[in-house]
Length: 277
Image (cartoon, rainbow, N blue to C red):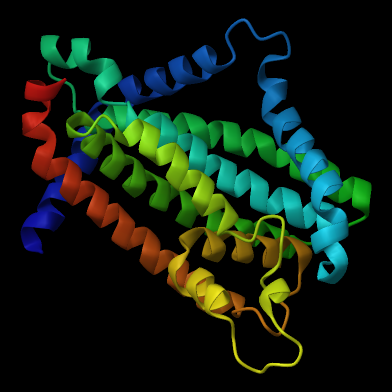
């Protein structure tokens, strides 16, 4: 544990030395994302709005019966899950795509993965404007407690960094991960209550909690972050949901564990990257 702590502190010190490079990489990634796009950064707002509109049209009649403020409910889940999916997908090839630079000079290898996660985070922050627009349009009141969304956002960022480091390292040795991950994220999306509520799993004639609900509650990190976020935006937690305080603790724990898994995996394999890229 002491060696791991020393390694992490070493990474942090190195990151401060290369912070200017990190900023340049993040700026490059954002510019490349919107290069030759007529609307440019506006797509960070339009994408979640259009996605919410499509899902609202498709799922309103099926899933909205027991959900208050369904458009806001939808967009809260969509923007958080989209960030996780985009950042992790970008992280997959973060090391491989910079192979030429890694072969020519010394640069901390993890900085390329971190830049992908952070550039996606910038787009995520911009997409929050879409949430504000939908809240205004649907009459959801703004309160000072809305500022507490910084808690699940920070947890999600830490989780995304750990997941990105893990995927970036694994993909160097297992290139099929790029194709496999798209399937994993698709399944993950359907196992996350983005457009439905866990209440839809319950049978009114049964007091037992359905197995699907138990799995989602206990083993799906995105449920923890999205449900926290919704509770802080919509200001309610249904009786059948896990209390927000418990979700905050669970989310923080899962984020730290994922970060440690990512750091350990990346650090133990980084010296072999040069042989495979």
